[in-house]
Length: 142
Image (cartoon, rainbow, N blue to C red; front, side, top):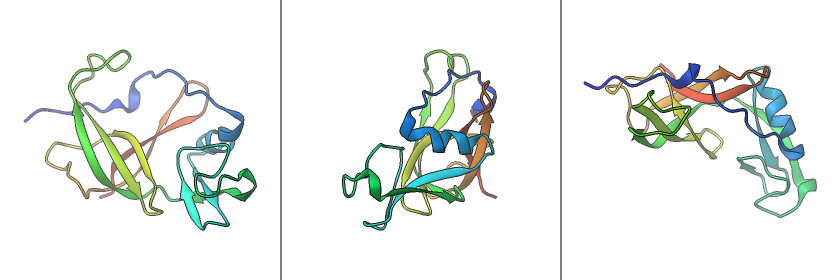
């Protein structure tokens, strides 16, 4: 059985923070997940954007905290990677569907090959970044 690497400790480049994504990144300092919610459409969106993908209006958006719990919708095994992930292969890259219905692409950590499956329940795992923010990864919920 191939062992999969836990990428939580990889020294990653810092994500770019834009004015419209600042609330998202500020919340990661406290290991909280905020998503944008369009009050008029009654719908969530991820990744952070300056306007709603549902109505096209910035004024309809508000930030709401969510648990980050979800399930693996799909995944792949990365066997070749560029720096800084080179020499950390293989690792999991998954599309996770949150309870709110949005999809987030992220690494799955603390997960064996025997555990990994479509439909796997996951929860947030916060990887510290050098500037005090945290990067959202996922780990098996049980």
